[in-house]
Length: 96
Image (tube, rainbow, N blue to C red):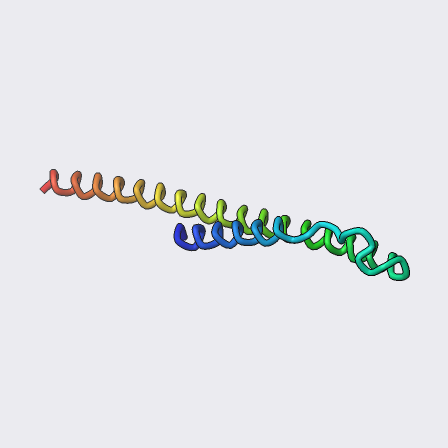
């Protein structure tokens, strides 16, 4: 689980890098005055794409954190069960 969580954290970082590397707007009338409505529409799509990458990165990062937490919980449970079983074995050994 911890290895998978680390892999996901790497993907989250990559998504963040890609998202922040995207342009957030087009330059001054790159398509000319005739196609200004396209420029406006493309600008909105570019902002939406950046937001989508940011959301995806955040979500993958949350899943990564959840996996780490699950691994920690499993480890604590396993350690507690080991201690309990060791105690039972010691008690059984003393009664012989």
